[in-house]
Image (cartoon, rainbow, N blue to C red; front, side):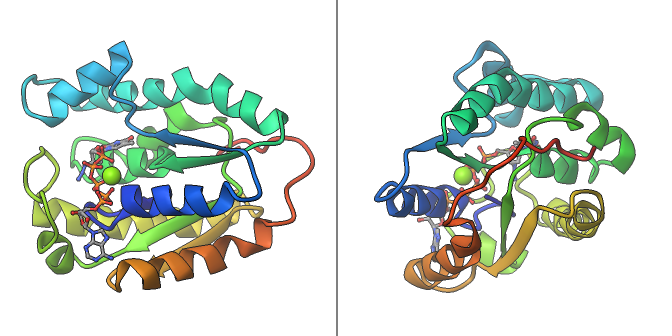
Length: 205
Ligand code: Z5A
Ligand code: MG
């Protein structure tokens, strides 16, 4: 589950998890995972309690995914469903919106992570996002940055379709009611209901 700030990712990830749990064993993972030692460094940075070089924080976000990659693979091999609240696409979109980092450089550390079968991208205008609770408390929650991030997500969508043809990318209008958005998401992931077989695909390989 990807998307802009306050687009409802955490809310909708929880709802999708409950929906799929009726028929699947589901593992829900949130990135950044702020509970690990790396996650605690990320958390301090996001709350502006510490300063880090742009490259250093980018690599920490990526390392935070790599420390979970083994768990993700084990879950998939056990036949379970894994839902991630943000993943490598957020990593690229937010870091590459900084003028100091190039798009290609930002992708590199996440290359060969387990690839998702579907990306649900919750799209929302920065104006609507701002009206939702809690906006503006953390480092990246600024309108100008969110606009750039939205543009980069569009580029990632195109590039991902070319590089990983198997990934379903569903852009969902996240400005409706909770129930409307939930219905759209369930419809988008329906093609995966029969399950996935074969090797675990690798991201951007
Ligand atoms: N980041 C990065 O730079 N690099 C990386 O690799 C990764 C992340 C993984 C923190 O992420 C920051 O890290 C983030 C990207 C960066 N920075 N920004 N901006 P986070 O995931 O921990 O952030 P968060 O605190 O969970 O916020 P969020 O994810 O942006 O919010 P959300 O999960 O999308 O929304 P929500 O919590 O479900 O909902 C927000 C509010 O809106 C809440 O009050 C809901 O009740 C309300 N809401 C939700 N849906 C609706 C609808 N449909 N209508 C009305 N109100 C709604
Ligand atoms: Mg969230």
